[in-house]
Image 1 (cartoon, rainbow, N blue to C red):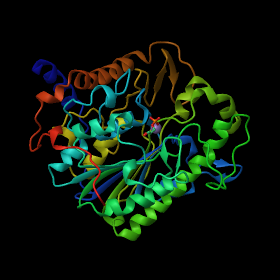
Image 2 (cartoon, protein in one colour):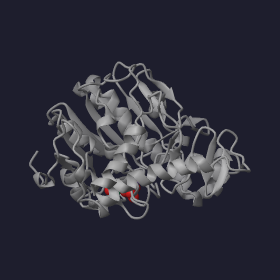
Image 3 (cartoon, rainbow, N blue to C red):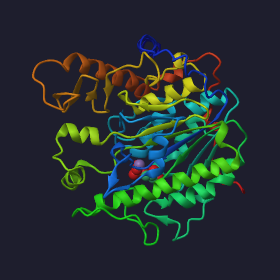
Length: 420
Ligand code: GP9
Ligand code: MN
């Protein structure tokens, strides 16, 4: 009820990270394109397999002047996998500790980025080469206020173009371009890639990148599949340039969740050439985040952050102060960025201490630490998760009305295929 919302509101407002004036509004009125990079982990950026870069395009972005590259982002998804990452990116709230928020809380009230931007004249669309009911997207997107959902029905789902869950990334981006160009500007869009998905096996002829040579095929194939996605992304950027959209569009690319679970650490030890401790394992599962802003002086940001921090970072770049919204994340470019970053299970990473399964480590050395160093921070991590959970589990945004924000009525949205 309204008491619950008051407590949450007070917590969030007290912890709000004020925007950095150097970057606030630098992307004002620009289009937004999010790209969910399936199963992409940070370790692959700048990694060379037998002397060959696996993701040369993303590496070039990481070292390109107008891209912020965040290399220390904690993956905060739960059982909802891709859909949890989508939820985090659009809402800056935590997904559920059990089950998928897309499946269990699709009827809630949200104040998502597409909805916030709609009040400012943006159109929104989601693009994905799988069918719309997967992860209950067609229901959740109505609550998030997506105007359009281009799902598998809009693509050429031939044998050659598909594997595993759906469309391969190259035809996905190529076929998406005319649909993207049909949208009124400014737009807020997301592209959910698919082909770098477990078990990463590729069709013959789709890659000439060498597989790794461990005894674990999942690990071996991951490099080929990640390289294919990297090529697809490069092609997409080239198409954006050709279409003229590139110079007034922010592109946010994020790894959705881990691809190689700890069950494959034996082979991963061969890959990275050292034993993988529980601490190393947590660090290996970080996800890369890139924000390309035309004309901005970007660079590497190695601050520790979480996926929940991407939305406030983007909003501030767009010149929208998140202080008016109940978002839990903290702008990665703000001087006031909060330092204790929770995993969904209550563990956390901070500059000094990291807690994993009730054990406390030095973040710098990865060594186990005796004593109570982690305890006060664990409390902070728990509180952040709890405040977010209050909102999601109790549907509290029903009771919150941000200034200048027009609420979404999910009945206004439905995704029936239109002729293109
Ligand atoms: C399916 C795709 C993959 O549409 O998003 O889902 P995942 O298994 O990674 O959650
Ligand atoms: Mn996924």
